[in-house]
Amino acid sequence: MGIPGAGKTLIARDYAGRGYERLNRDERGGTLRALAAALDERLAAGARRVVLDNTYLTRAARSHVVDAAARHGLPVRCVWLRTPLAQAQVNMVERLLERFGALPSPDELRGAARREPWLLTPTAQMRALRELEPPAADEGFAAVEEREFVRAPRGAGGGVLVAATALGRPGWREAVAAADPAAPHLVFDWAPDGGAAAADAAALLAGVVRGPVEHAACPHPGGPPRCWCRPPLPGLALAFCRAHGLDPAGSAVVGAAPAHRSLAAALGARYVEA
Image (cartoon, rainbow, N blue to C red):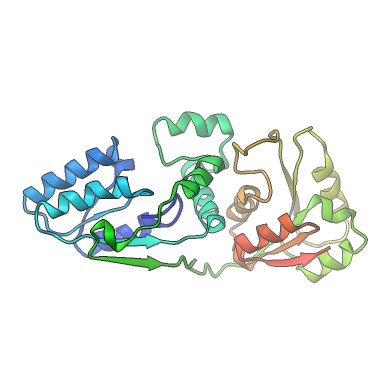
């Protein structure tokens, strides 16, 4: 169990590789209560090793699994993936890039989510975190195992992610030089008014670095984010890294605000203050 993007599917596949039968609501459809009924049927048919990977955010949602197993005299072990929100956001964006090939627009995301409920907006993922009730042994679990999230290294080289506002700072040239002038560069920005700050900053940057320079900006309005491209959400950075075969954790973020430092931390990238 864990919030959306916690990494549950990866762990469940490991169990499935060891002979566990996997039950997942996103793949089967329906509700968690219906999934517990399917579990009951499989146990009645003789299954004894089953892994369920869903959010199971509340005690009530988890109770149906515990009750179904108890009717067959079987213990339930809860594996709680305590993935920080920032890392779950990275995981969610990477899944979206895998699914769509590029960052989906809010309309594309909303339309696809009708068929694939795992496709979430940032606000929906944040809401899941607020709804989370930590699991406890008194729910009837034989054990509660807490796992911290560890991202596997990728081994590829990194790029340089530059906030457009950082190029307005007096020390931006030194900051860019302290990154990697020969690496691919992305200038990113949030421009709900349609401004050209990212394009202008990219043209300025192209005159002082050797690597290729691109620019990207989130055009979506303020309020609760319905898209994954508004910094410091990691959408623009991860889409750029994916397009160029770069390792986000091997990259550098040149920034000028706490939000830029937060983006670097989420990516595992080095932060350089302009």
